[in-house]
Image 1 (spheres, rainbow over the protein chains, first blue to last red):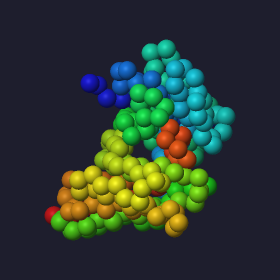
Image 2: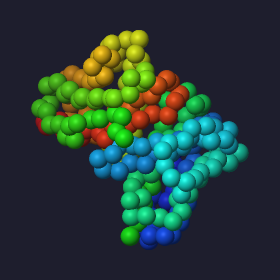
Image 3: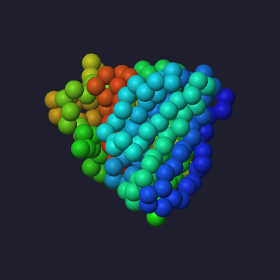
Length: 114
Length: 112
């Protein structure tokens, strides 16, 4: 069974630009969560989608948004990029919202903002 | 605010010895705790969990201990193996299914 895939794997943008990251969950998984990983901060929860609806949201500004499609694929968008947005963005999929023990992470998209 | 803290950014142990990774939390509402392991260029993978109704959970070489009064949990790996070298994250949530708060991670190096 294919794992969680994230595209692109690496991305370089400049301040003020916007970026869209994509996540394809494991087949059959309907929950997709997004996390930001920065040195010293660990993984910070961005949001979770289930059945195309945002179920949970972390403490991030409105520049961070996401959506989920009917095939459970999810995209995350960051507008007006800032230097501090440079991070590894991880998505994770699970069968349902409560299946955190069987939540599988993708390899991440490393974003560098110059 | 860092509600989950892993105060040791790195830990080095000898193969065969015990590795103890620590995690502290501040939110008394947290009731469910997980440990994840992360290798370079890969996403984190679930390792072991514990809920507040227990103070210990064991899975092979991995044991997690929870001290709710101290708001502290620890992961013990016995015996440690070189393949255990990775970054370990602890995570907490108020209940299963809630969004999780992660610590900053501890990089474990097991030397042969």
